[in-house]
Length: 313
Length: 313
Image 1: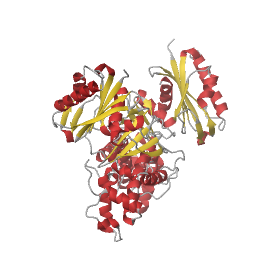
Image 2: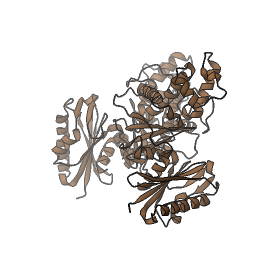
Image 3: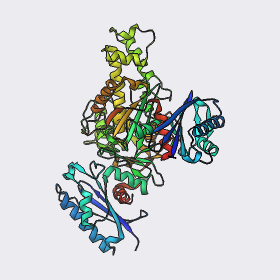
Image 4: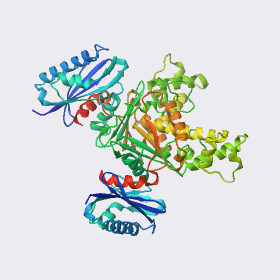
């Protein structure tokens, strides 16, 4: 039987799992609820049991599986230690060790979920065939992951790829969740896009279809921008500007081959990518030979792909 | 006989060379002028001849030497190709191949000088014993180098560690050499420090010892700041602020263990480091567990150390 590996993506509501060939073909994927919370051992036991059962259903044994990778929604220290993961209530644990013990000592790798998603896109998604890439995930927040020589740059304090908390806007007055002011996440996340739109609607007295909506979503803003709405276009301009600045910082430091843009906001597609590229070019006049900017390809599966790749090294 | 390696640091005026043990002990260092320019082959031949002669003087043979590393003042592509190095007049060459041919096929490695200096500091200087570090060189310009897992991150377009051209100041109106506006180099280089001081002297009507000088240098500004001069202190505050922002970007992306500050401006010592650290802490509220900031230790020898290490891999 062909050898396989397993990717586990632990989110706040559900745990996604996938069985992969070592070449990156997804053989099976499934989900279980993230329950119980606040009890690492109990959740890891459920994950271990689910993996064993599903391997068995696929007529695979533990020895057919070369290892399991896990992505978690919080910072992971270089030794695999997790100090705290707020939204699943984990505190001071070594989750990979627990799972490995339950799976007969099988290798288990652990990474931050945004970094792991970046690795997934680098393995089988938007940055496939590239050794150096940076993924930026535009969701409720802004996450990211840096891949150099095919490997995650996890950082020495668990901050590797925390692109959303780059301080890019000097004039910002409101505080970000991190305690800072002017973070990329405050502008270019779904939440940030809505906030920018509300700010502009309050200050600019021009007609906008957004003014007619009871509650504005990031999708509303992007759709309105595509339709030529002035306020929405200004929001997208600001969002793209600060993304362009953040990407230019990354180009002037790790200088990847390609940037991969993912997350819910990226569903705006090439319209958004073109705007980001325009700003990125403006902020990188130093060279004409620039990194490419592409859309992510794996959607919500990036995490399980990357987790599986993580254990393959 | 113990095995050795050679480091070559090619500058605009002189070529520095050093013979090292594989453990990083500098056995001998010397210099030759960077002549002729605009002729890669002729200069490399002089370097090769000088290496052979000096090895011979030290009673070493070519087989005692495991390889030569070279740092050059310009971008180096991943395959060792140099498109252009302006201040020595090199164009479209593979310099490592030329030197290797002259040294009986000996391994020759090539890197950008700022990256190579960062590697030197990581090997035997301020970041010794750290696997992940970032060096920032505050000289006439601002250069840098990123070391992850003990290796340079050279970048896919030769821009790895081009920290000086991070766009950090939104309000800047003057153009940088790179064609952009608001680059770190415009503020925190020796040139930038003088410019900031002149700007403030022109706009702020407070007494300053700097107003008495015919020509201001960066050292004058830093000395005046140490002595409590109001204008000079404001300059150092601005210089440190944008350095702190740049370091915070690096902390939120590659998250090194330590930042190493070098170059002529860093001779201001702990006074400057403390100011930078204060700003860095302000811009990284996300965690208390932060990268250290230290002074470079190798001075002008960082380049030959790093070049030697480059060929050791």
